[in-house]
Image (cartoon, rainbow, N blue to C red):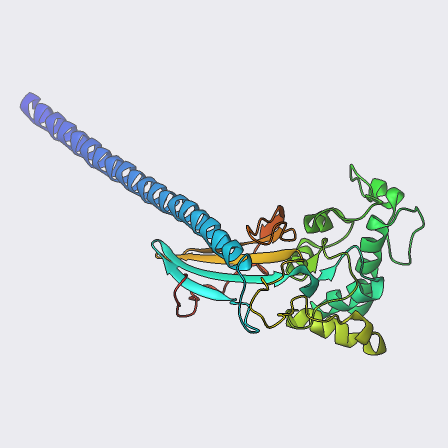
Length: 304
C-alpha cells in the first residue's frame, strides 16, 4: 500500500512538472512572438523614418533645381515646367507657377472665395458663410457680416484668440478662422495665396478649380482674369516669372514607393543674374493625399 501511494505521488509530480514545462514553453512562445512583432514594428518605423528623411532631402534638391531654372533665361514660350526626373534615391516631380495663378485670400472678394469653396464641394449657404468668416478674420472692423464671425463669436466658441483684423500673412492662418472645417482648409491651401496682392488671376497657370470658380461668377469673371504673368520678349533674355513671387511644388517618390511633397512660395527674383529668391511660406504639396495610394510619377526626363 505504501509503495502504491509513493508511485501515485511520483506520477502526480511528473504530471505537474509536465504542465509547468508546457506552460513555460507556451509563455516563451508568446514572449518570442511579442519580441518578433516589436522588432518588425521597429523595422517598419525605421524604414519610414529613413524614407521621410530621404524624401525631404530629395525635395530640397528639387527646389534648388527649380530655383536654378527660374533664374536662367529661356528661349521661346516654354517655361520648362513641370519636370519629372530621377535622382539617386528616387523620382521628383517639380513644378513652378506664379502666385497670380491662385486666389489671394487678402484681395479676393467674398463672392470669389465663396465660389471657390463651392467648387470644392461645399453647398451654397455654407460656402457663403465660410467666405464671410474669412473676410471678417482679415478686415479691420468689428462688424459681423451675414454668416461671418467676430471676436465675441470666437470667445463663445472657447477659443483663445479672435479674428486677426489684418491681412493674412500666410495661408496656414485659414486654420484659425472660426468654423472652417479642417478638410476644407486642406483643400483650399492648394488654390489660394496670401502673396499676389491682386484680385486678378492668371488663367494660363490657374488650376481647374480656380478657373471654375471664376467662371461661376458669370459677368464678373472677365475682370478677374489677368494677362500671363510672364511674357517672353522674344530675344531669349527673359527668366520665367522674374518679377513675380512663385510657388515651387516638389513631389518626391523614394525607390520604396514612399511619396510626399512640399509647396514653397518664394519672393520675386531680386537680382536677375543670380536669381536670388527669398522663401516666404511653405505647405504640403497639393491636396491631401499628394498622390493616390500606389500611384507612380510619370516617366522621367533629364533633370539638367
